[in-house]
Structures are given as structure tokens and as C-alpha cells.
Length: 199
Image (cartoon, rainbow, N blue to C red; front, top):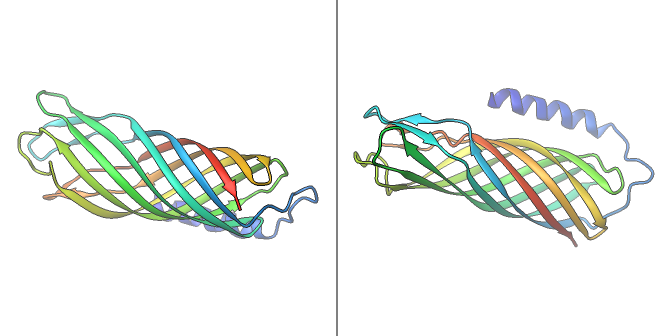
């Protein structure tokens, strides 16, 4: 899945390099900062080694990122964020909360269409993950792990002025921290509303 996503991103990037920007495109400042907030929806429930099955519930996500346009159709972005979710056991008691701090680097291929700026993206990240809760076997609760992962997605910016934009963005992330031989997939979707400033 990760190799396929990476290959699609490369094909898209190569194709877009040859597409000229429309004549109506506005020259925007090269640097930007963006604030993001929204929903994290994990794709996988999980079962611990002791057989207890957990339903992995939705949570929230927030991020602050800074980026640079190298050309109107290509930008790089670095971000730091936070997301969390709860996992509820099928057989109580016990509940686990996952708190994650992602540090990401993202390449963006953009379609500068005046006031509207759609884009696709692909990136890598380090996911610092802490598990908290009351799971009885204590396989991973209370431990912090760091793991590398990938993400891919797309979105659209709406340019209010050359210096201010609003946007929406969807991503899918792949990351799998492990506690005591127990893998927990953080794989899932994030959907955010964005507020950005160019300078």
C-alpha cells in the first residue's frame, strides 16, 4: 500500500511539472504558516495478545505547519501536531487512550487556479505515541514509543487575499508502534479545516 501511494505521488508530480500555470494565477509570497484542526478516524480495531478486543474510536487532530513554495506548483511543508483517540474494550473493564505527537515533512504538488488552489501531497513523519489507560495486563499502558510512518492526501486552499487562505485537507496515515510485541495500528484518516498566512 505504501509503495503504491508513493508511486502514484511520483507519477502525479512528474505529470504536473509539465503543466503550465494559468495566466490568471497570482504571484503569492513564497513562505506560509498554517493552523489545522479537525477529526482523526482510525481504520483499525485491535486485539491484544490476551484476546481482549478493542474498538478504536474517533478522536481529534490539531497541527501547526510552515512551508515554502519553491515554484507555484511545488511546496515543502514541515509540521508538528497532536492527535488522540480512545480504544474501548469489547469486554469491560479497561480503556486505553492513545496520545500522538507527529513530526512531519510533506511534499505538495499544487494546481494554482487563482483563488482556488487544489493540491495533492505525500510525506513522512515520526509519531511519538503514548498509551494511557487501565488495561489489566499492562502490556503497553503508560509507555511511550516513537515510530516512523507515511501519509498521503490532498486538499484545496481558498485564497481570501494573497496573504490569507482558508482550506480543507484530507490525509491517510500509516504508522504502527509496538509495545511488548503488540502492534497497534494508528492507520487512519484525518480531515481538517485550515487557516493559513503567507509572508
